[in-house]
Picture (cartoon, rainbow, N blue to C red):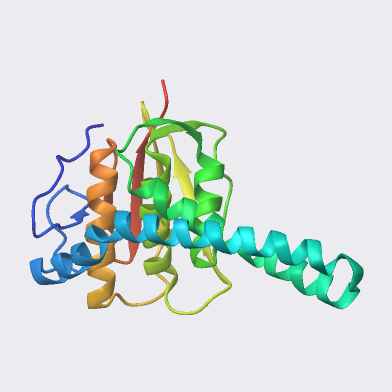
Length: 219
């Protein structure tokens, strides 16, 4: 099995024959550049937010010391610390995506679970116990875009998944629970690029009613 080359703008996802999908419209250059404008600010934004959060953390530490004699104030400080910890987790995830991609082994089940959690989608079905060789931070984002598109609107969604293991790869097959939109095409363009860059690909099957995601298995 061979994967498709990294597509050029406008990025397209493929059909089962490896040709551009004709069921769903491709993303437009304007839409992708609009997203790129936000992405080009990401590194500077992350740096600015990190410095502000550091100051906030120091202030909360001081408040916690003062609040030791006041149970109500102490509880409020603990809640603020917990919220700050969650914000730092979100920031660190964003910062990881701005680093140069570096492929490394990651358990398929962990990758799928983390991608699904990001968009409130649960995949139902047995996953093989294999490691895939991908850039974890960006691949989790790419997979979450695919799951979000397939799952349709809302939260708490569930999608059945079937897996196969052709030599050197693992494939995930999942149905589309809702029709695609223009925003879906933009998301799939980004996912297609990330998958191709890491040696995998994204294809539409059964007249555009099912996605097939291919990932390279770690050697």
